[in-house]
Image (cartoon, rainbow, N blue to C red; front, side, top):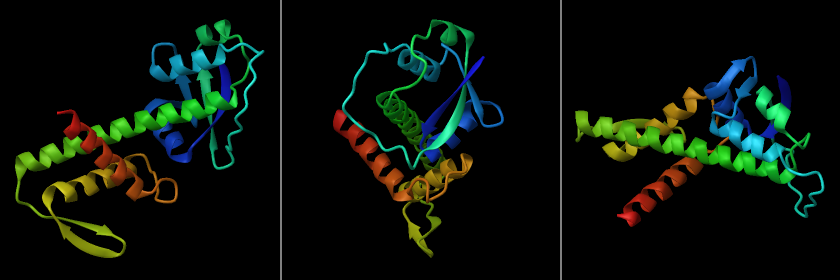
Amino acid sequence: METLTIPIKPHLRKYLLKEFETKKNTILVTTKNNIGLMLFKMLSHTKNYTYNRIYDFSKYVKINVELNKRIVVRKIGDSLRSEDIYFFNKMLQELFLRDLHKYIETRVELCNEFSSAVECEIKQFRKIQKITNRKGEMFLAISHFLSKYNIYENELEFETLVKSYYRYRMGLLLSC
């Protein structure tokens, strides 16, 4: 096994560690999972590649990734390019949001099944608001999802996830 260190956004690091952690702060990837396939493709670049964009990874944290023997043997490049790191973070963000949206949908459906007229209370901006069942359950689902991965407000804003879910719902409604 070979270990590769990759810069990654703090909330995505927590998400990855919760989903794929094998040792303390290390994830194992193989060619049998999506993350392993992405890394294999990124590591198999040619060394003659030139690029123009410069990305700022100063706010990123590091994650250790153990690579399966197949990836290590076949890889041509020995490091990830800036574009690859950016793409890797972008793809992980999409996986994270997909899981969040599924989680919210499941919670809202369960809440609707058991009681359609219940008002949910949530604490936001230091005041208690009574809001309708669907919206309240959505806020609670986002809060539970973030607490499941120990993600805090300074790493990823709550409002960003609310907007993301609204865009997701609008996309579903427009596609019907």
